[in-house]
Image (cartoon, rainbow, N blue to C red; front, side, top):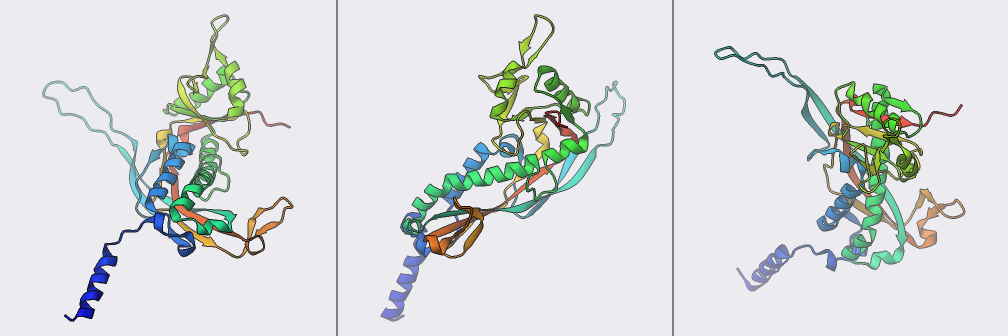
Length: 313
């Protein structure tokens, strides 16, 4: 091996041992790819702490677009057995179900100066915006059936199961809401509410005569002893409560978050103060598009119920 070959080999070995460091990479040199793992993990953590589906539902590991698994719908019974008797058996019901992931995307316009940031600084700045956009869209689809690419949502389930109570937020109506589940052998383990319901919840009581007690614990944000999460969405009407056995709600995240930065074009879904679409070239801006794949599935419609105001005529 001559000297030039030795130098080439040493150089190749040197570059092969270099590890990717987002602190040393400018965004102008890396306009698409996968968000660095450290920041992708932080975005996922933000989502799991704020998404109501992810707070209450059951996480399913996924490594591809679809996941098939068995759901134990109805189990075998147990029997008393006398000494020496044969133990009876009963049939269990297993359902094979498939959870499918859908692509969720967000586009965020930013100043062109952001291209001069390192990848670390850029995604540190953009992390809260990306995660908020993702979890709001995911929850509105999986809970409210708003712009929903999935075949299921909690709103669809309560309609399919006819588990809807119409009326004001009162102690009696909340108990009636929970009874909807009990009649189908499900027991509520959480509520979904919104901050605007707080006054009505504080006034809700159960009991008779002078033995009235509040059903809402403001300090612990619990309803009838069950945790309540506040869902901030303009698509959730005031006076609406969802409850259910959230063990029947499953979600998955099969892939890392990908991104791409565009320097030209018009963003038709975002408008300025005059109602005009944002033109990146004219405004000297760039747009970050981030995409991820998420899945949601409800294994039994009867596990959820809804309290809603009486529709106005």
